[in-house]
Structures are given as C-alpha cells and as structure tokens.
Length: 93
Image 1: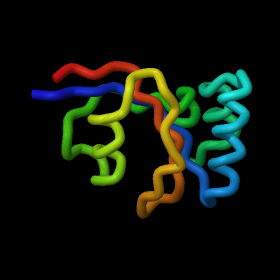
Image 2: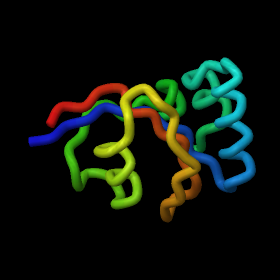
Image 3: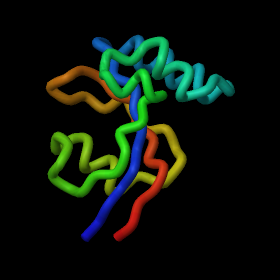
Image 4: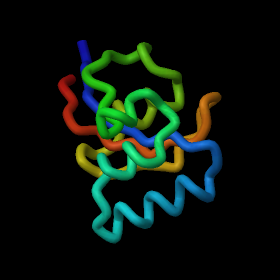
C-alpha cells in the first residue's frame, strides 16, 4: 500500500498562502514559517504530518501528496480547512 510523509502550512486565505510560498522560494525555512503561521496543530512540529496512507486526509490533499514531486512546495491547495502549502518529504508506492 502507498504511504507518504508530508508537511504543510495551513492559513485562512490564498493571498497569505501565496506570500508564504514566495518566502519559501526565496530561501525561508518551511518549518519556521509553519511554526509562525500555520493554524494547524502540526505547525508546532514545523508542519510535519508524519506518515499516512491514501484516504486518511481530505481528497484535495491526497491528490497532491500522492502525485507531486518529492521535496517541492505545492500550493496553494484549497480544502474545507483553508489554504495549504504542501511538501511531500517521502513516498512509497
């Protein structure tokens, strides 16, 4: 069965999400920004969600996590919770 590990930053609006993505692309640390800005409890762990299988996260999240290149920041991804920046850190098929 497929498994992946990822980290994310969850914010309320797309503008903030895009701004944080630009900061990461300019060299800011993903984990630091997650600790400062993410509204998800995982923010305290630098956005780390640990390992999970398909179907454990919302559909929009799964679609990105199980298809995106590893170690590349994806997003903004809109879900019922808000806007996410996602980075897949590991995946096994």
